[in-house]
Length: 201
Image 1 (cartoon, rainbow, N blue to C red):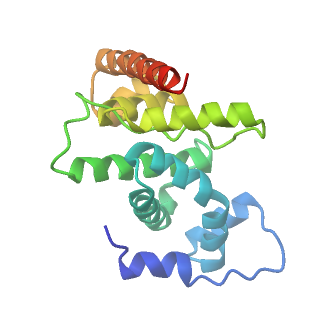
Image 2: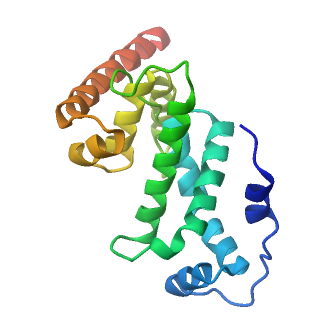
């Protein structure tokens, strides 16, 4: 997927120079007025978290970058619909997730989400402990090996904090399917981790 010219403009031609650090509500109001400095600051503050959310779902860094760009573009064009019922980060994350799922559905060679699962890039906040970091990296690699459907459900519940009811609405699957996929994904993940442990042991 290639960035459209319009997408590139939004994140690369914004004047990033600022003489003060505006508050959150001020930035949102500025985005609603179409102010590019406000858009840039919102992008700067949320880019890393939204990229990792996209990556956990689509599994590929380049695709995650494209999804993130498209999500910010949509967010800026629809920001007047933000009513403050949830945090701005939660509102933006939902756009990213839907864009990521749209991307997966557009790939004709993929199995439907009801039957498979999605990729996990587990840790945005890792400790400096070497052993813990190693374990996290092993988990990330194991999750990347999961079928797409498993990765999706596992990601949304385990890493994005959604419950089964919310996942069923997001993926348009039943609550029972969400629960089944989640438990199967965890079981498969443990099997993969055990194999990796035996291989390294």
